[in-house]
Image 1 (tube, rainbow, N blue to C red):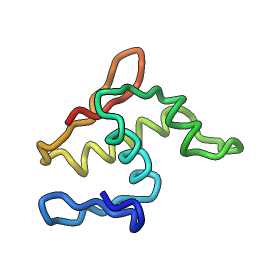
Image 2 (cartoon, one colour):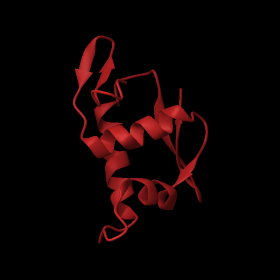
Image 3 (cartoon, one colour):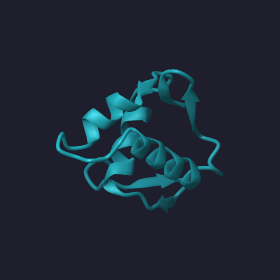
Length: 88
């Protein structure tokens, strides 16, 4: 991941991500094995005035999982009752 360019490259291949997807992925991968609740993710990456619900986080996690489904380097898993974490 290149934080300055906000790009993700895996095995030499660029994986297109939005700014919000990049930020969520960067957060999860910066703290592997640490679970983050939907609320923690939302508070960090959505504006206070946003009308988005916690389900918006689920949508972004689903998009990230789809984009990296064929990449064995890491997985984003659900920690039931808590939220999400990356496992490298």
